[in-house]
Image 1 (cartoon, one colour):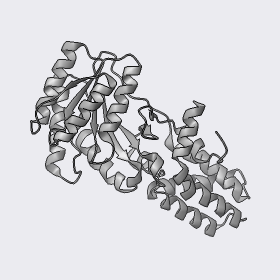
Image 2: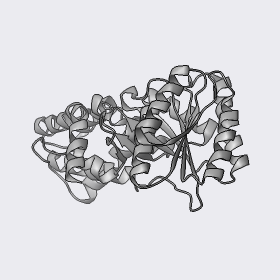
Image 3: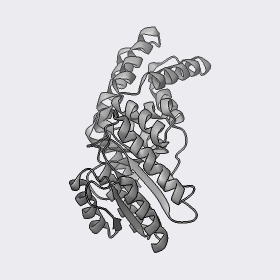
Image 4: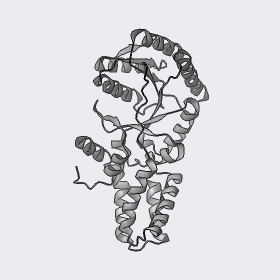
Amino acid sequence: MAAFFSKLKDSLTKTRQNFVSKVTELVAVHKKIDEEFYEDLEDILLQADVGVAATCHLLDEIRVDVKKRRISETEGVKDLLQEKMGQLLGDNPSLELSAAPPTVILVVGVNGVGKTTTIGKLAHRMKQQGKDVLLVAADTFRAAAIEQLEIWSERTGSGMIKHQSGSDPAAVVFDAVQAAVKRGSDVVIIDTAGRLHTKANLMEELRKIKKVITRELPGAPHEVLLVIDAATGQNAMRQAELFKDATGVTGIALTKLDGTAKGGIILAISEELGIPVKLVGTGEGIEDLRDFDNDEFVSALFAEEDEA
């Protein structure tokens, strides 16, 4: 766990520099907790893509507790901010696994967010847990997407269901659910096209896929994971809203956290959409996909540079 905390802390370096370092500077400059201090803190939160709603929530909570606890030093506000961020993020729901296999995980998201790579890493993790995994190539619009998933299938030792490029994605999913039941697969992970979230017809295709899954296996899909690139910032909010409406997203898999200064988007998603972040990618390695832990995230974000 110490190794993962260190990895998470490293991946949050840019966010820490863009956010916590500025809070530290703010505390050093302001000795008094006044309106100017709160306004500057608000600016820092917004610049880190914490979002308007989450920023207002945090500031309201801080104002109340500053009075209640009679905090007079600005340094105390920094500690209070860390505490309130942890409370805002709430519990740590894990991936939903069906008591009666197969568990079906539908993975959605726009192009370029690392969706297929996330699926490969998730398949690897499931295989490490001794589960029989079936990957499903329902992104039939790009031959390269099918080939990429095939590589992950071979690399992780997972089964795979595919059709020819250009086939009906819902038909691939139908065959996959049937095959999973016959084979006794434990987990089915479905890759979908990197759908442009502004295209209504592509969202309708996702609804069709989900309907086929539910019809063939009542109670499924057990998870609808939306893969989001952390660097997308506030654009991720619009993506999440549309995918939530179309598919009933149950969790977020956040990728490329190590390459962005906008890690505050996690708080915005939690506050405005009520969708928990369930998985987080902290690097390129096959092991660099872990369950998201709210306490670890906040601790790593506020960690000192020499803290391992």
